[in-house]
Amino acid sequence: MPSRTVIPFGPQHPVFPEPLQLTLTVEDEKVVEAVPSLGYVHRGLEKGAELNDFVKNIYLAERVCGICSFMHSWTYCSCIEELLNIEVPPRAEYLRLIFAELSRVHSHLLWLGLYADAFGLESLFMQCWRVRERSLDMQEAAGGGRVILSACTIGGMRRNLDEDMRRAFIKEVAEIRRDFERLVPVFLNDYSIKKRTVGVGVLSKEDAQSLGAVGPTLRASGVRSDARMLGYGPYKEMDFEPVVEEDGDCYARGVVRVKEVLQALDLITRALERLPEGEIKVNFRGRLKGEVFKRMEQPRGEMLYYVRASRNKNLDRFRIRTPTFANIPPLLKMLPGCDLSDVPVITLSIDPCISCTER
Amino acid sequence: MWDKKCRLVTVTCVDLIDNLELTYSFDHNLELVHLRVKAEKDRPFPSISGIYWAAFLAENEIQDQFGLRFENLHPDYQGFLLLSRDAPRTPMLRQVEERGLNEDAV
Image 1 (cartoon, one colour):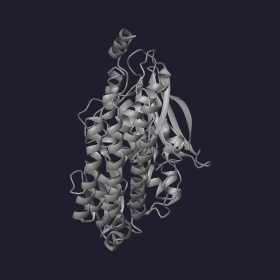
Image 2: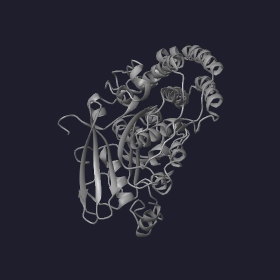
Image 3: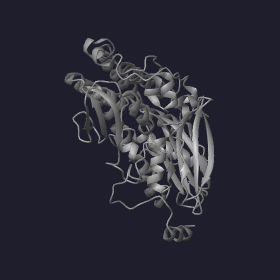
Image 4: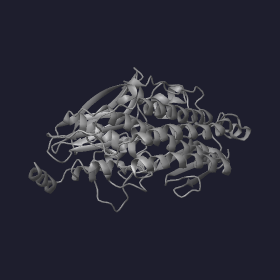
């Protein structure tokens, strides 16, 4: 009987961008059990949101995550819009889609870079981030900030795109696509990437569903589920089809994200071409009353917002279920049985965002 | 829910002052299904982590924030999943003084 050792993995670890601790029980080099410890970046945002006035909460919601911040403000604003019965102008909805898909592009490129770094491909990491930089420049030009844009507001958008910028964006998206397409064969065919990822950290379709996996983790296991299929915003006019892979291993999760970058670039181009004319914001008035559950698809997966209000200014309850929160149980299922050296790759394959998880 | 192959989305807890309201949200072919129950604050509540193991994170979080004890919760963090040992306990419960503040705001 081999002896068992307990290894604390994290919270400070070279491959982790954020503090997550996994207490690993290993037998020789094989992981037997993994137990997570959270709480290193818990900020009490949900409580803070109850004390703030509901308009200020847009900025709070944006700061849940430093990568998909636009999606948070969009989801929050659409919750409030539903409570107040506001109809958002179509141009604003299209602009929201453009910004949301841009943040998907930059989030996935960031992840692909970190993923390459996890198995030691430094130059691929640099290449991914170089492409990502262009999408950040686009966000900065249109939204005023690189990541935290504060462009979304209740009733519409605060930033508009003029005609010159719209044309420049269509060109820029094509160039990002050209640059990224040069990296795609590396992720799909490279021998050393396949060696590290094929058959590693397999999550079966049944497990993915019963453990509540979301986003690329769920879709890589062969489940056709994407919150964008609900058709919120302009997605209903986009003939959206989710990217699905069957194998459920780290390689499949990488492939799903590579394809989603290309898909997001397509969606941006289509939205830019169809961008309707008109207002970008409507004024609102009314009392907040009632409750609403809202789901949207973030780069990391489906996110659920719950907003409940019975008072004028403040919310009674504000709950955010972020994708990583749902993806931690599947991660704990993938780890037992793997080699200790594969733990970084498997953990990164769910794209963990700890500041989202803990809020 | 388990037999219908519903995917557990999350568990949401709201403090209604006299008791707590728990909403279990499930996804069934992209449709959200909610189950709502009331829980008394000082009585332990049965955990669903025996059926939906993934619920352990959400239930531990509720244990941290609202002080509701769950029976047969595994793994049980004893109310210290997110909060550190020296943090104030049950921060999400509505305090009496906060209730006064809210009434002013209306």
